[in-house]
Image (tube, rainbow, N blue to C red):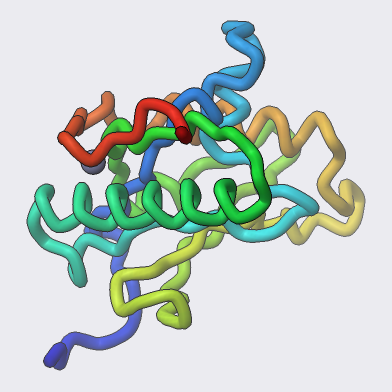
Length: 167
Ligand SMILES: [Zn+2]
């Protein structure tokens, strides 16, 4: 179906699905920007490679499907969860890759199709300076704040399948 090479170019767009209230944290304005990308346990975070998901409506469809899955899993565990897909924010891969913290750390943007042909990941790229090795907690927070800033404003979405509450 696709003949394009599997390398994400700097000029390619990636989009991040946004869920609320999860990504608002506890409502604290200082915490919310850190919830946009969390990198739990240093793991990569998912984004949509727009070369493989061209239309905004296709990205929204992925968001609605992810929302449905979250709700199904929460229901199974008997939990009430009010996490709703609200839209996406985008950035050029090259802009994410060019981002550097004060101590010289940055990000990788890589194709990771195991979760679908459109699936890509952003992960921390530690600097290669032997004098300043390793990512500290403060480096990670700084990098996450940069990501929150360099992605576009929200391309919003709402639809009739948006859950309101688990009965
Ligand atoms: Zn929806």
